[in-house]
Amino acid sequence: MVEVITFLVAGAIVLGGALGVILLPKPVHAALSLIASFFGVAVVFIIQEAHFLALVQVVVYAGAIVVLFLFVIMLLGVDTADSLRVEPLVGQRSMAILFGVLLLALTFGGLFLSGPGGEDGAVALTGQESVIRPIDDRPQVEQLGEDLFSRNILAFQATALLLTIATVGAVVLVRNEGGEDLVVDEPGLAAE
Amino acid sequence: MDPYLLDGVDFGDVVLSVAKAILAFVICLVATMFMVWFERKVVSRLQNRIGPNTSGPFGILQTLMDGIKLFFKEDNIPKEADPFVFRLAPYLSLIPAFLTFTLIPLGGDFNNGNDGAVTVFGRETFLQVADPPVGILFFLAMSSLGIYGIMLAGWASGSKYPLLGSVRASAQAISYEAALGLSLAAVVLVTGGLSMNSIVMQQAGEGFGGIIPNFNIIVTGFIPFAVFLIAGTAELNRPPFDLVEAEQELVGGFHTEYSGIRFALFFLAEFMNTVTMAAIIVTLFFGGPAGPAFLGSTLGWLTGMFWFLLKLLVFLFAFVWFRASLPRFRYDQLMSLGWKLLIPLSLGWLLVLAGIRVARNGDLGIADSAFGDTLIVIGVAFAILLIGMYVLRSAMTNARRDRLIAAGFNPREVN
Image 1: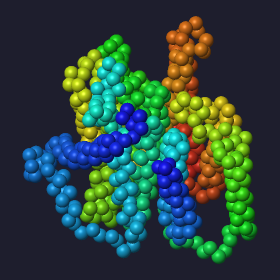
Image 2: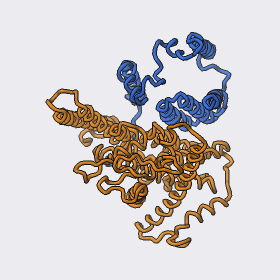
Image 3: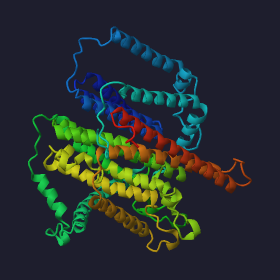
Image 4: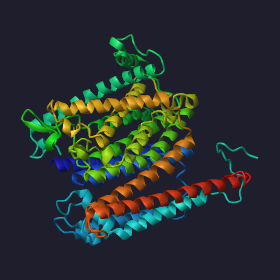
């Protein structure tokens, strides 16, 4: 009973936050409702007794990623909404709707495939046991870590490589080869 | 988990939980008020002044008077402000500050293998509001949420200086959170658990020679503690890392436009965070309520409270001491300290600790005994750490050199 009520409230927060992200005119307000949505997801994790994932959700997504979003919004000073009439990329919206519908169909398909109990939705969809669900009595962190660093080590390393590429790319982009002189403010050295 | 919650929840358990939360809230507020007075008094003495001395004995009621004054001041919202976010921001700052406090074990007897539980009205409970299984991660989550209050306050004020203050704050918080988390991981590695109670219990036993306590500052080898203390001070935006509200540059920083009770909430949150951070440091690295094991528990469950308060006071004094004696960092110094020193250092140290742990578990079979394995692993780990430090150091020197030459400095003058 408590579980159902908590789920309904958390679900309402998740959906309301998600709607706020796309409907609110000011980017900062949209970012705030994104935080609310992430919090709702964290609560849903807690209902499933995945405490560790819930906290990671808050630390990483609500805590770090949205801070970066807000940081960019503040630095660029995007206070007013851009005109929504013009599509930045041709066909972007129709593609977005298409993929959204496909994703929804996939999710519901997974739910129907999983049968009346709904227990094995994740298994039906991906062929893998859910990592959220405690597999045995050991602490969750231990199970999650073992799963991540043994069975899914390839995905883990691929992600690490991707992040490294992104970092190097960012450094290359801001490097100023053969352009105008950099302004250097190093202590202890006077310009010639 | 608290023992009284293990066998289902009845009405009495709910009452006990609520009572603990209210009690913790009162303790937290009183401690915060004390900290404001303590800081003003100590910093005055360190600067050869007298400090508050009029309201009450030793001026101890000064904070109360200031609070009452702020309550009755005009509450001003600037015309350019975003009204909703402007009102929201102080609460976003205060609530995480208090929620972190609920994690702290305030007392209890941890000697002779006790788990610090006390019996209240026939129910066994820890002297902390909640002991979630993810314990210390909750602290990280709250400290990363607390930054929203500051960021949004600066943005919502619709004014230049607060915005600059909040942009500084967010960059600083992101940079230092990594170092904070990595040094914390060392403690988690040694403990083998995330809950605050297990962290304290692990430190309560007898350490080396029966006299040196088994505190994490020794077990993790001092470096995580040093990194945590520095990163924690930066996370609090306290001097010498208070660029967020550098008076000479930014008027009042993010809270320039705030007045009355909303300003008081920010002020309260800041000092509450200071008290909580000191308590977290004490719990993580100095055993929290667990005293040195050989001294025993002469005062029963009050022993824990005595040790906890004693250690807490030391760190509160240290924070004030920092403020009185260290000049503020420049912004680039702040960033290079965080990214080029603290993060690589804590990451490398974590790898060394993890290597030692694997070796002590045995099964490596390099040498004949687990002890031999440990020695070899420590040697190799330190060699790798030193090589890594050398590579990082030379990469940084070369990058700086290239940058200066590209900017038109004479290559011979650049060293």
